[in-house]
Image 1: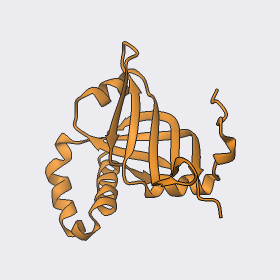
Image 2: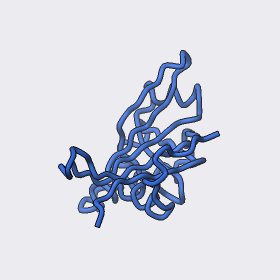
Image 3: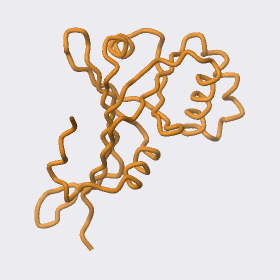
Length: 159
């Protein structure tokens, strides 16, 4: 079902992979529409209990595509460093997730996710989070990605 990584020498452990996913700043969500047209969009996200969550507007291409096809791909790039090491190269770390996306309707879960997003991206403003969430809840959708398959890859400086 999933192809083996071509450069298996760069495959990293599940623990390292999850660390990159948990600590990534932004991710890229790939979906497909009813005409099989691919669509990739960068977004902020948070991982809760081994699922990836993100927020968006109540309508738009992301949600249309997820309603059409629940299978998605999500990618995160961790640390990168372009270098010249007898050749031009880049040290990097990345994660690719295959999974199924769904829209979350439960208000308690939506609130939990929005609080976790606030905590991840603006922890110094947590005292303002409840009010902001209450003001935006009716115009905000929350989606979850169940992780079916995950791989991590890195090219690191040789020691």
